[in-house]
Length: 124
Image (cartoon, rainbow, N blue to C red; front, top):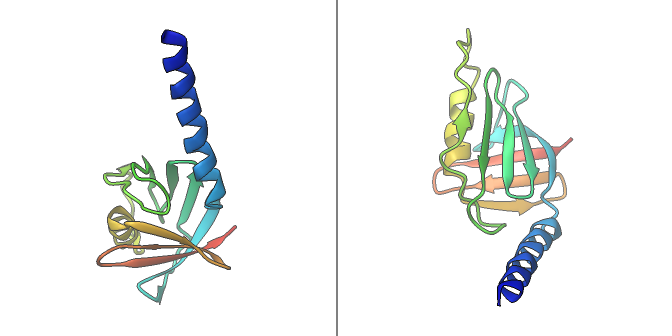
C-alpha cells in the first residue's frame, strides 16, 4: 500500500514537471513595456518551472506560481528592501507583476496579463 502511494505521488510530480516544461515558458526575460509604455531600466524575469525570480531597477524578487501554467498566481512576491535613490518604475513593475493572472508565450518572449496591467518581455 505504501509503495503504491509513493509511486502515485512520484508519478503526479513527474507529470506536473512535464506540464511545466511543455509550456516553453522556462527562461530569462527582459521587461520591454508595462501597459504598452516602454520601460527605462532593464528589469528581468526568470521562470524555472513554477519558480519566478528577477530584478527591478534596484531590488530583486522571487516567488512561486501556485497555479498551473498558463494561469499565474504568484502573489505575494518576496522582494528585497534596498534603499534606492531612484524608483525608475520598479514599484509599477512589482505591482503589475503581483497582479498578473496569465502568461502567454509569444514570438518575442512572454506576455503577462492581469485585470489591470499587461507586461511584455523579450527572451534573453
